[in-house]
Image (cartoon, rainbow, N blue to C red; front, side, top):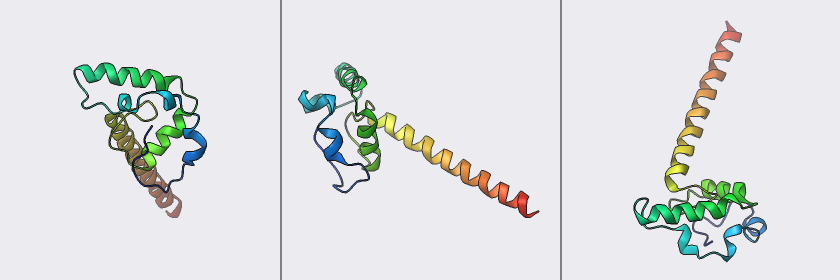
Length: 108
């Protein structure tokens, strides 16, 4: 898989990329030109490769850490990752609000 983005990461790319199930696959398979029509089959094929990959979590973390806007990473599409980022942000905001609420109740 081609690495696009910031070369500095929390994820050690050298350790996981050599173990990736996609290593011998055509990289174009993981970068469909759309999300509909014939690309749906391409996305499904890429996700099937990811499903059996031992380093899927590391690949997904790399994509999230580097804000990968294109391609299938860790078995996720760009839309999947956007939804995941939104969920994470909402959870962080809710946790912060809960923490503030607890601080107020302890102070009272």
